[in-house]
Image: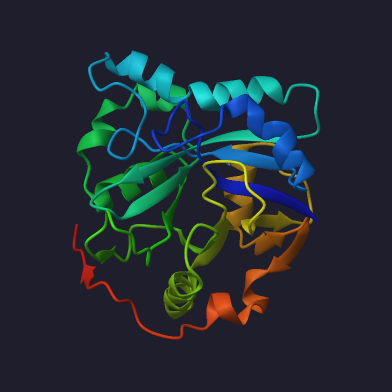
Length: 252
């Protein structure tokens, strides 16, 4: 079993990140992971990059955490991949399959609707996953759901409460869509983590995308180095209540 972290923040790209990109490598290896996808908050989220830089320089700064992690993994049997966490109005999406170079050439990404973003990602050969759709936090006022703008749903987010994850699982099951899991890690800790487990190594973000799109990979919870399929954990799959936040179904 090869486990990959799908949701990770560095202090280079995310204002809420506490760890430098290079410092994740040995830590994640010790946790039993075979690779990571760096998904820092983009410019419409809690990003660490100054807003007054030229676009090209902003992308360079945004991808610094990824590059530092990639450099630190050289010579090790560990895959470092690039991703993006993109925010609309509290509803966030994990973008897998675009590159810093693609972002440099596509400043228009900042002005897209949800449907336009999804269409653009498909055209780029990328995959869109809605992150933690039923998250409730003090900085959020509601839950926004938009069908038809993603390839799958993050049904297990280690930073979410059990019932929030269970609601996400129930939502994904109702749609019959793909499911992923991740830690949403911002700092070192010994709490439960998440990831996608495969029976083969993933060597690139393109391989990750093609594997998940093909229905491969199992969402897992990782505790003490042991990975358990999320679907085997009742607390993460059976809601005990509905959401306490109002749910808004978005059209755009």
